[in-house]
Image 1 (tube, rainbow, N blue to C red):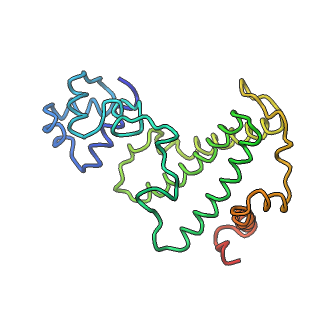
Image 2 (cartoon, rainbow, N blue to C red; image 1 turned 90 degrees about the horizontal axis):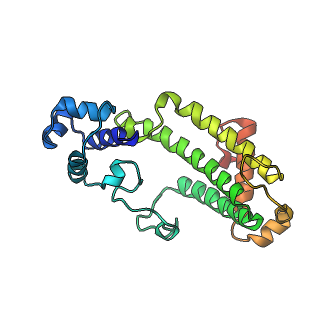
Length: 237
């Protein structure tokens, strides 16, 4: 069927803490057949696909890996909530996570505004992918800290996760460097002018009065971490 289906039906079963036999009984098939489906050794028919979607309360598109939304929705810009307007307010009550989140979010506001001024779609996409991989790595490390979490949550196997993610970030960083300096990378178009990237502390403070202080703090914390390592907390400097 496809590479995503075996992983996703395994994930859904383990999230419900069902054994293969329990899930097979509920889906009216043998445990051996379900094992084949979960290992990708056999392809299921349409009837089973629909039955599994109904049983797990997800869409067929989700089972097939065509969408990351379990209800089958395709996200658009308007569907994504603003970080501070999400109904389920995160990071309540703890000062340190809120502080770090704001430093990073405010600095990203500056970063992506600069990218908008440069107006290079390929550069913006490469920077966004770099940031996504970085967040993905941290989320996956925290997810895997609990041995009870289903490894099938991710499509890249654990044996290749660190090497692949590090390699992709190195490639993306090289692409970003080349594009930002006017070099072509494959079929990607480089930056035409870096005039919008002329910056001083005064221009940053003037252009981003709400966010510049966060960026300066982030830079100081990052450079402290480079000098002293993670043992000494940067906010204690």
